[in-house]
Length: 104
Image (tube, rainbow, N blue to C red):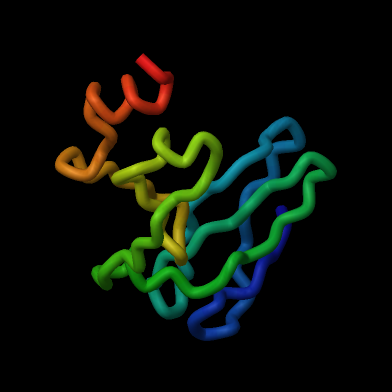
């Protein structure tokens, strides 16, 4: 077992350790009953990102996803507080925009 500190109430929360797991996992604090994300990294260290009010009934704080080529990321968003993503279909690049991008 490992412990991480809840970003809401600062209470220590026990988490199950899987030596072969790498990624993000949702945790619930048994004291304040709020959810937050815990990241397992390659060297198996657990850390809390920050408060994630969107996992507790709040709104996601969307930001435009960036990358290259930028046309590929039109209409794609990431939440600032958790790992949620969304695509706004009306904003994604059209076939005509892709044709222009590829010089057709």
